[in-house]
Amino acid sequence: MVQSLKTHPKSFYGGGLFIAALLLSNFSIQKMEVTGEVPPLLVLATVIDIMIVLPVVLFLFVLRRKPTLSLLAPLWLLGAGFVHWIVPAYAKEHLQYMNVSIILVEAGFVLLEFYLLVIFIKNLKAWKRSFKASIHTNPHLLSRISTANKQTFGGYPKLERLIGVIATDASAIRYAFFPQLDHKPEGDQIFSYHKKSEYFGVFLMLVHAMLIEIIAVHVMLMQYSHTIAWIATLLDFYALVFLIADYQAIRKSPVIIQNNHLHFQKGLRFHMTVPLEKVKEVCWHDGGTSSEESHSFTMMLAGFEKVPPQLEIRLNEAVEGYRLFGFKRKVNHIFLNVDEPERFLETLNKARLVSKGEI
Image (cartoon, rainbow, N blue to C red):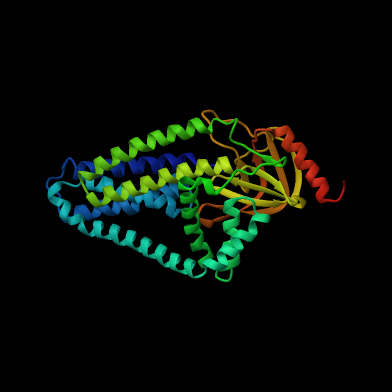
């Protein structure tokens, strides 16, 4: 799914200049020691600048979007590495509280996931029954997991959302390490969307870059903090596993028309099920509407060059879709590219007529 970042020139450039000035001033004071020996108070000021002020300015004035944990966590980690790099060796003892804080936060996440895992295991039998039964109505893995979560933990919305975090991790592990558990569906109403795209080349490039980045970042951070170096390496390794799992999910999760429903799963990033009676119109994309508009879903893969969508699906009312970690999104417009667009358009229109009883 593609989302545009709505930025205003003044705030964007102003925020960017402020961040550049903030980084440069702290670098000059700490690394170059232009003001002399660095006292504990200046170390604390640098930590506040990098870990608090910088993210606030970045999200409020540059990106102009609400902060999310998925963006804040790596930003804080990079910030901690930057602080360790610029603070002089003799003043690093004043960063112990920051190292302890990072460890405590990481331990808190581990304990939370362990607690959720215990709850999940207690309800495993009921969850497995729902998961197996949903295969007849939900052909994609993520939608089956989502259905099983809702049926098992639906009485506790917050718990269902938290379990969704584990579900994303579990799906990534399953696709990356046990791909044989999920077979690619076959049939006349199955439509792949990756074979004629350039995404495989992009995927190989990203994997190659991440392998180099994991080694380089680990070696660099190890000079300043073993704790941060290993945390960064684990997060980078998770990102690599997630990238591989996402590609496996793309291969094994084609667009499916089944039981008067249209099923989408874009790797691990997004999935939704659209009842055919809610499809208002299916047509070739004429460039008149933007695939980056709000409340839209783009079933397209990145390539070396940007390509326009082939088809548009307009809904007569919004349908709920699911993003990473169980976050929801209302969709009323779908843009997509498939390997056989003519056959997809013909099959979908025929299925719509059948669902209405017109054939």
